[in-house]
Amino acid sequence: MAQAKTGDKVTVHYTGRLEGGEIFDSSECHEDDCGCESGPMEFVIGEGQVIPGFEQAVIGMSPGDEKTVTIPVAEAYGERIEEMVAVVDRTEIPPDLELAVGLSLEVTQEDGQAFPVLITEVTETTVTLDANHPLAGKELTFDLKLVEIG
Image 1 (spheres, rainbow, N blue to C red):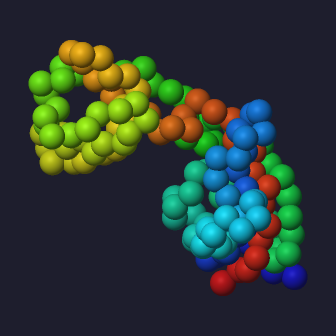
Image 2: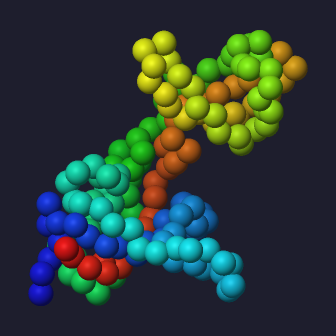
Image 3: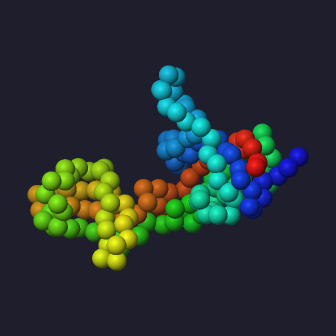
């Protein structure tokens, strides 16, 4: 039977969990009648479309294979970088924006490159913005099922 390798387009069902068992993402619905339109994820192994540890876990699997893998921080979203957290004066943020902890914003740098940030604190005078990926610094566990190769 064929085994997934670099360059293959694969279709994978997955459920991602944090260290405490909390599901952070899944291609399958885990609640009765939730109404979600989930489905398996497709990607090409080796093109960097998913985190490195996820790609490596799929290599060698055959259609129908299932396994659970734990991906260390370095092969997931990396360590949290404190330099990617900035406290800015509220006057630097457009006054029409509604600010709330947990809200995601897009920041544009002077060179025109845009990137997402998460509001982690709001005070009367400042807003704390975090450009780290929300899963940075976390070990991730995935239940995987290879649906298809090709």
